[in-house]
Image 1 (cartoon, rainbow, N blue to C red):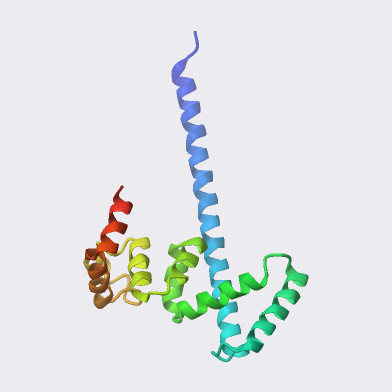
Image 2 (image 1 turned 180 degrees about the horizontal axis):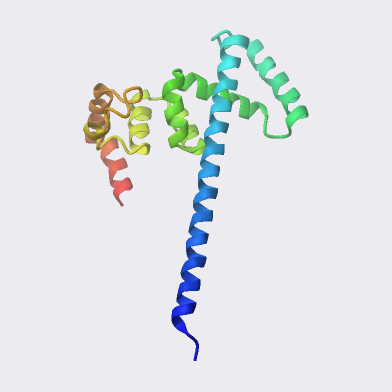
Length: 175
């Protein structure tokens, strides 16, 4: 008959190691995601200010196409025109670097892209608060988020939540 206490201890040690390794990998992945999001924001900001000079002109399309070709030649397929437009859009949506710094550490690039393509700023702010888990606990976290959330924004998001569209979102979120 096997000694089950030895087997149990061995399994426990192995499981703890699996958990610790997974936590390390997850932390590394989150750091990479945050760094890439910052890179995209910086590229978009540079294109917006230096190249397009905060204007959307026809020549801007040509410049983005040319940049995409050159960057793709240098760094591979991840630098298409579409990706550069994402970079530009994130810089246009999140104009404040301090706010974006908070957002990029908390949300994945996929979440950020979802938010930046919402044209209604009230909806974007509402979902940002929801994604960050701050909408319901503003009073508890206000000292931690002075650059991200204002009382007015929370009140506006609560107004959206009480609207029919916000009610539908909250029902899907709870379900």
